[in-house]
Image (cartoon, rainbow, N blue to C red; front, top):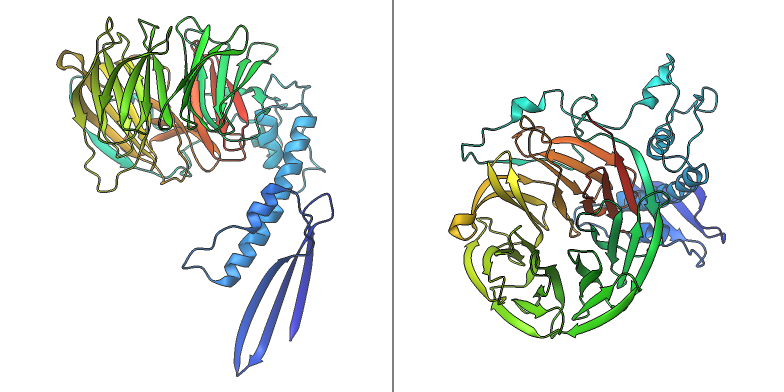
Length: 503
């Protein structure tokens, strides 16, 4: 009988993981492998390593692979902590961090000299003719085909679908001018829990706010120098959604604690609390009449409140929990999604706040998943008019043309099936480019990357991706100037990416 024992430190307090492998070569004439992973000391305080040790076992996996996987995950988590600390302490940006984690084994003997960098730039590396010169390339993957070749004519109601994997590497490594980034502009890591919603202010390029699962709302300014303006505390459970007023003076937030809160940003105070009977799941100010506040809840209804008094103005009942919502630019239509994957067009009177259901789009899929994103855009190159983007919890992106003259009737133009996911991940439209470009969508993923998709391509839809997070990316948002993209992950880290200038 042979016995091999290996030790690995897992915490600063001396906690260790002991992996013991015993190979009995003569048990009733057959060989038998036994792998056992135990925690040697009980004072392991690193939650990441502890979660690695408690990875659930699938029904079709054997004990040997489970033990090895847990052991390797624990070592990987510890290594990631040290890498990130080193990256931040050196003040380098996104490209420098990417180069560091992809460095070859002989990095110390053949290191490339670099220019001085600050947290606001990308840590550019000096060009060289050495074999390591590939490390200086900006992370901007795109398809080798020109985007114009995949564009569809806007006067055809063509519909197609595609199914891809988040980890599918975009073909080619040419720089995509449309959505290339110079690096990380700034990072906010004050939040200690998952960021559930992230938005820039209306008509604002610098005002950023994000809500978290611990009930806090954080308001930041991303201009130089980036600062945290306020941390609004009042909700006792997850912040499910929030919205800025048109003048960015107020924020209305909804929460799983069954309340709606209105905050005055200049003072950082909660000026009104509206109590409900079920979790409040989505919220929007009326784009024209900011005195109307529409809230969707788990009680299968949308309620319109008077912002000034907090009184209920109107209600509309639906078939399931209202999980997401969005207005058109005129305020006459509300588009909402429910927990069964249905999308509703609801007309709203801008003077009285009265609601009336107009149309319902029901997915043909047998399995029903909640709608996590409903986003309206007043013009699209693909549809030649207003469009609607929806995203479901299972990773299905749908792109609809909107007939405003028929009270918001929806026609499915194309769809994209991403890798099935566990968390509620939201997607967003990308800024419009030019008349000869495609229709782009940006979304987070559970492999910790931010992906860009071109909906006009039936194949090779992913055109770019950003790497920098260590945990699943849940939400993304563009600012009004379209020069910053913000993304947030499961552990509360918010990264603001600076977009490269294009001619």
